[in-house]
Image (cartoon, rainbow, N blue to C red; front, side, top):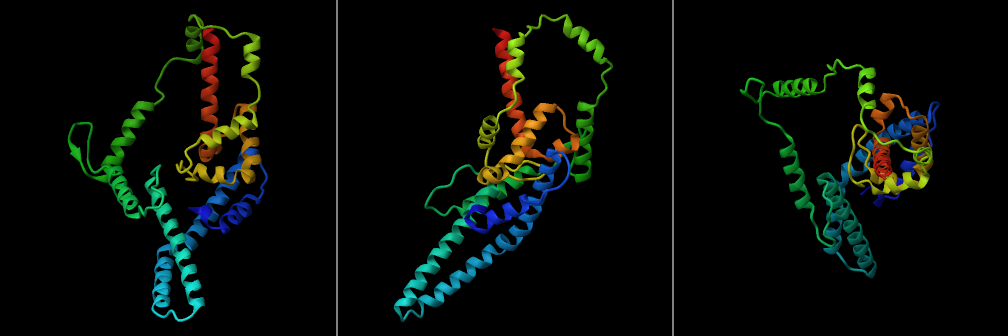
Length: 275
């Protein structure tokens, strides 16, 4: 939907051109935050008035059709129809993306369908009642939140008494296949730009990962602008093997790229060790 506005590209380029000091990951995080801030403002100014703009164009078309007297009026009518068609397409795309539906019937207005999908999804996403630990149900939102927090704490609480040394000793007793030096060298090769680019374009374009909520579509659509920063950050991460937790947490695009690459590397380790 954003790409239907010519000014979208300018918003991305201006936001991305703001540089700051710090590591590559910190600079990328800063640019993502800046682009999100600028898009929120731009979205409010442009798409916040989309419905009003459609109504205004509809009224202008109706008034013009009631008073067509000149040949130039026919040209104006055609131009207004094209503008309304573009606005209706943007409205349809907006609701389709809110519904996170993966298909659109070309040539058919599905705005009402997508609005229904959004309402149903939001209704399903709400938890109205849950059983507490003693089996009694509760509808209190505060109680529901507490039950979830307590159960996750109990499930993921670091209460194990095994030390790292004892775990390593147990692992050393297992018949784990060993990789050769050549295989290790192959696995330790630097991540290429081609690998990163292929991963980016395999991501779901309209998914909105948290916490920044920037969909992969933005990076795919404006890849020439963001390519250098993203590739250098991913390569630096794989080279060092470390990154500050708050940077990894706030860079959803980095996680979205790194996880599939790491998964493919683990699959390759499994394949090599089984040979």
